[in-house]
Length: 189
Ligand code: IMP
Ligand code: MG
Image 1 (cartoon, protein in one colour):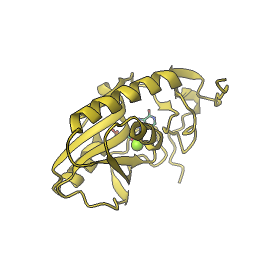
Image 2 (cartoon, protein in one colour):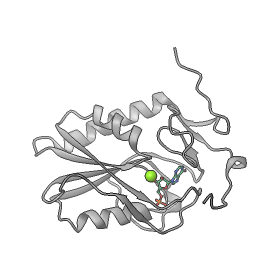
Image 3 (cartoon, rainbow, N blue to C red):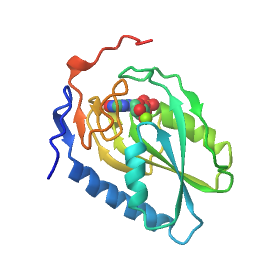
Image 4 (cartoon, protein in one colour):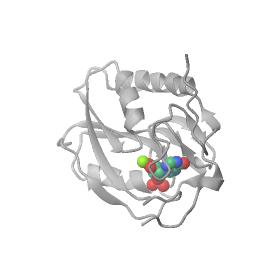
């Protein structure tokens, strides 16, 4: 039975659990095909938004992978990017000469991914690719190359499946548009 998990303020469902599951499986197959026969792929999840996507994608991979996490902050509790990016937690693993795949929940302005991509390229990986579950193409400011995209979505603020608004809604198994009435752009600090 499907649990009736509906969070107040996020009832307008954009992507169901099944739609997400099917697409993540396809992405896992495609990425596995690309890296098959090579050394173990190092998958790097961007905390915290990509935790569910990373966990599900790893389970859909048919090749040997390693997993690490990195944490940056650019949002400070707001619904639009502040444009400034800070590294909050670095990797445990050395990426030198490794095939690495950055796993991100959503690409919006692209500023976060550009920052992390440049920071990791400076450590000389053998290759670097990016997988993002969601892409808000119209909002791009920094043209970062995204190799694997789950879904193109419209310019709406979405929550669920790892994505939050002020740390809420991450546990919802589907992705919903946040009711604009819930959004308050005051700095919470
Ligand atoms: P960018 O640097 O503007 O591309 O922002 C990317 C980050 O902003 C993502 O990793 C998310 O954490 C956050 N973000 C952007 N759009 C949304 C959204 O619609 N819902 C939740 N988080 C979002
Ligand atoms: Mg994020």
